[in-house]
Image (cartoon, rainbow, N blue to C red; front, side, top):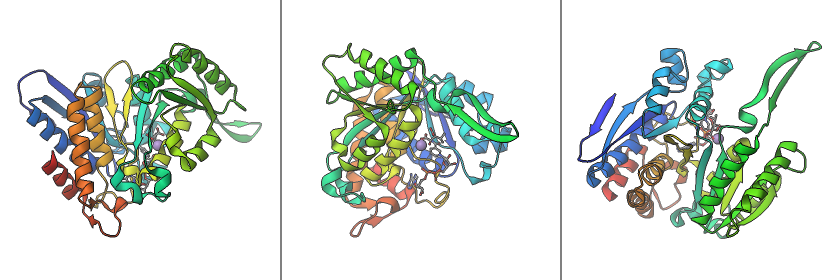
Length: 364
Ligand code: NAD
Ligand code: IPM
Ligand code: MN
């Protein structure tokens, strides 16, 4: 599918990967917003939809078909919904939807995953935590995305002395740590100038190197405060006193796990966007998964994906004004009391994905 919003000026190519489960629903929502904002601003976009994940396995026998990868590499930005589902869980690694997602991150060199977790005042009472704990939460997880335990070799399952053994490796080189640390420090300079580096240096050698290199990089940023925290304590602090964090810098899997806590703080994982950045086109996706339990029911919260488009306008297209327009429209709909089921409360009006999207569009 190719679709143009024709306007004057540079045409930005966006590769659209809806994926599985609620992916197509939330991406449809985000695209409606994207097209409207682009068209209103005279900003020309060209959308190309491709397959990734389970749907790509079903159609092409490959979770990351060559055409998808080529199109992504040729684009200015990529928008992704989510991949995965029970149907493909028994598949071998090469035929798992998640392998497609990890593959595109690696192929695009997306080593930095930025996951902002910001409490919207209107949603304070949606968290299972106390309002005084979550009010004012505003941090970004800077998750290393192309190394660590997810990619380290050797990996596999094999028989050793007749016993089945599974193994993965958390591997980081100095340059990998340096470049993600610099991302975190640069970002902190635009925020409250504090980096918290998360590791397990009390046990793991790879984390001892991580801690040493991060401390060295910190020397280049004397205006930014650095603290180190062990990952187990970090998990606790995130629910105990989350407002103490500004930029959380961490390894791939620690970042995956810790960032889902953001869903508890903000009321729903469905509200959380992300940007995956490297040296080429960036990829934008909500942090949640394909939510098979609610797929196809028009109940998914589209805010994480819509706000991922906002991040795209800011980071890939240099248009923070359009990003703000999107964020503000989302806030106003929530302030009026319209909610998808995941953040509904007594006194709010529960509506579906499509109606929520239409209401965002009204506010743009
Ligand atoms: P999940 O994030 O899909 O769902 C966890 C819970 O959050 C579910 O109850 C779900 O209904 C809810 N939820 C998630 N997104 C929501 C939204 N937008 N609105 C309302 N509720 C929402 O995690 P899971 O169930 O562990 O994983 C399901 C599948 O998704 C797995 O196959 C997994 O591998 C995959 N996954 C993919 C991505 C990705 O594509 N980036 C991320 C995480 C998980
Ligand atoms: C995420 C997801 C992915 C990850 C999975 C689906 C491979 O959980 O984007 O957070 O672990 O990175
Ligand atoms: Mn995850």
